[in-house]
Image (cartoon, helix red, strand yellow):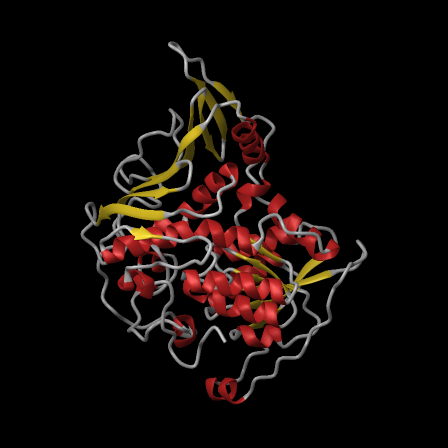
Length: 431
């Protein structure tokens, strides 16, 4: 394992070498796309593994603050990539064409913005930013620097969802006045206990050996190390994420808005709380969010204590479109059409269709080569992330939030407007 990151933090603050990389432009299919991965957790490593299934594509550099995660990523990806613990060393390199950012949510915007400003193309895991301000900054940067910037909302590349969208837009299920999204888990019925479990209240302690915990915190407030505020469970704390509402819900809301050609809601409201678990999480374990659009409403249910099936299908997610002629139920296994008849006979599909994994990643490489628009642009990803941010703002302030999708402002509610952005721990900032 080659190490190229021996610089200390004081050296990082003294230097700001931003060498302009070679711009790919319109590549020949035979040219190699050289990619780097920032954030070597399971999802980031998966993203990188899928991207290199595209012809003539390789991952040449890895970055993470946890050496154990780098080792796992190296073992899976092969090709002996260079490894770093500071993402800026990757951006200094002229030979890297594209960067995958798959860090915890509070670390999405800064490396992604610096990737774009360094002239490199970007594949960024959802959500688009830890705040709405971050999302807007990413949209503006991608446009200003004319970079390919694709968001990991992979359902857009799935034939299941592409077909289902056509059904909504064709009018075959009638006029849709309500789109409903669900995420449901229950440890009692899920043998994996994957998302229905309590995270408990473990004591503070020391980070794992070799982990640069200060760098992991980055722009987040300085806090003692706690295993619950680290890998995976960080999603339940406002400092780093927005709970399952943001982390999983954005996939569902993205499809609902894409199918409905919606640009943004006019208001957001939510009811919920920590009703199930007596643990240290800050985000709700049970919630119901509602957004009002000009000609329909969208809602989202998040439950950690009950996994009632989606249309009789034992899955932990789904989107329902309630039309005047039929109801369309969609998830990653397929879709069902239930007509509005006295004795409806569901029409089901899914055979031969896919959910977008892999296809979405290869589409990114195609965009890098051809300079054609990505499968999910930063603007599209931002628009789909905004409703979840607004729901969390409504939850944290205890009041519905009005929203102007054109100006991206909250008027008449200073407490809510303050949460459109956040403070950054020095020396980090969006600049």
